[in-house]
Every structure is written in structure tokens, then in C-alpha cells.
Length: 287
Image 1 (cartoon, rainbow, N blue to C red):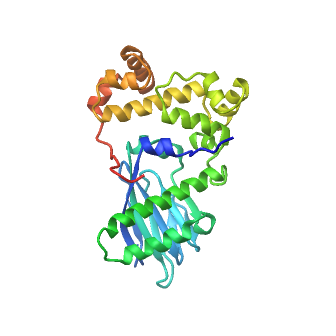
Image 2 (spheres, one colour):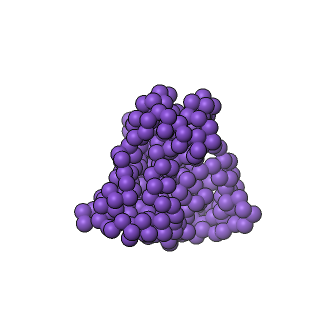
Image 3 (cartoon, one colour):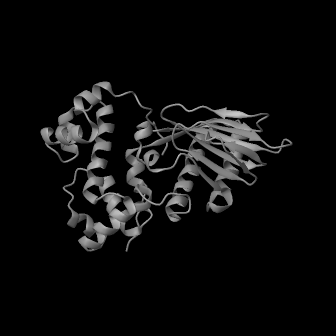
């Protein structure tokens, strides 16, 4: 079966933008306060430190590690003895904030030793070089390199399902080569008239086998996932102030059918939701 890019359609529609804000040796305890719509990516390049993720219990990191907080989550770092901690940090702005599909699919924190993530050495070397540089545009390159680190981390999670407490949901489905083909098709073309038969065909499976595996991995039926994805995309388009009729047509609905399904899933009509929706952070450029 031909391989596919499991993240391409998702990230084309829902972007992520990184912005580096710290690099060096923290002198003392540092708290990272949660703000709606903002995540963090920390790169512990050397040294050791205590990490408190806000649950009242700390843990000790003593090897180079990626710490990814996809959503607003209070956390504190305390450097270990000496001055050997080397830390680089960036904020992450997800298109749609907490409703970004990856944010919703991931746990509060993902912690992975750098040695386990394939292909990071060259990226981290270039990142360190650019952070220390003064050449024009280097801050833009630094931010893009943080995004590359994030993308390689996401690839690592998809290649090792279940290793980091992510067993079900969208990530679980994308980790399966056949189910990923159906999910990729839905992500790329939510307005297509997808049926169980056409999605099973995308996955090269029988309808019964596809439905059973999809539900086992994703935790929802194909129809429920498709509907939820359409509503997620619908919210994004409504935030951009597209007319409800245009949003409905883009997602394969009539205006009245979209309004009905949206109200059932969201709890209010598309127009009321759009009028009261907060201006969630949107990524300009980036992933």
C-alpha cells in the first residue's frame, strides 16, 4: 500500500506557529503560567532539573529531553545544583486554540528523551547556531526550527503508538497505516459525501473490519468522527467570518442541515456561536 503523509492535511488546515522566548541557563525556579490558546515546547539540551506539572508531584529530568505542553497548563522548572542546565523554550500558537485537533487529541504534557526522536541532532545543532547568531532573519529561522522539532516529535508519537499514554483517539487512528488513509481523506476533503463504504475503500478494508478497527483505535464510529471533524472545520471557517451558507456548502451540507447538526453538537446555532466566539489565536505561517 502506498504510504501517505498522516499529518499533511491536518496541519495544512490547522496551523501551528512557534515563537522562541528563552535560551540559556535559568538561574532559579521558573514558572510558566497558562494562557488560553498557548502551548509550550521546551528543549532541555543539557543538565538536570525538577519539573512540576501542576499536580503537586515533581519529577526529575537528567537527560536531554523534549517537553511539549500542547495546551494551557501550569508548570514550573527548578534547575539542579550547579549551572549546567541548558534550556531553549518557545511558545506555540495553535490555530483555533484549544479546539485545534492535535491539542484536543494529546495529553497535558508529552515528555520524550531527545535520543529517542530520530533525526533531531542536525536540527538542534542548527537551532543552537541560529539562536547564537546575528544574521538577518535569524529569529524567523529559529522559530521555524522549533516547528521542525515539534513536527519530528509528532512523527515520533505516530510511529510509536501507546508508548506515551496516547492509545486512542485521532493519534491512535493516525498511527495505524490503514485507518490513517481514511482519516487523511476526511481531513483533506471534509465536504465529500463520505460513507462507510467509501472510507473503507480508502483504507483497503472490508466495511465490517474497517468499522470495528476504526472504533477500537479512534474511540468513535466513522460517522461520528466525520461529523465532529466537519464541525471543527466549520468553527474555524466561522471564526474567519465566512457566511453560514458558504460554510455549510464547503462541508457538504445545506444551510438548514448544517445549522441543525451544529446546534446538536455545539449547543447553539452557527450564527450565535460565531457572534460570541472569542478571537482564538491563529497561526500565520509556520506549520
